[in-house]
Image: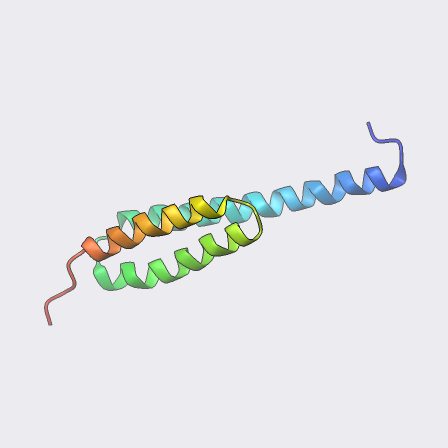
Length: 88
């Protein structure tokens, strides 16, 4: 257990950061799952924008590795592009 005042504060603040990071990571994972299950091209394009942004934010904050974010975005982009747009 921490003996110094600053160490105790560091434990408290790191616990708060961990919860926030975890919440953001889980939220992004749920967004990715929702995008993977969609079949509508227009909706997929809109979802892809928000998912891509969320993945970039996670990578910027070192919650996930930047290469993992890039890999996920690449796979999701291929998925979105494979969906047929509605014939106009």
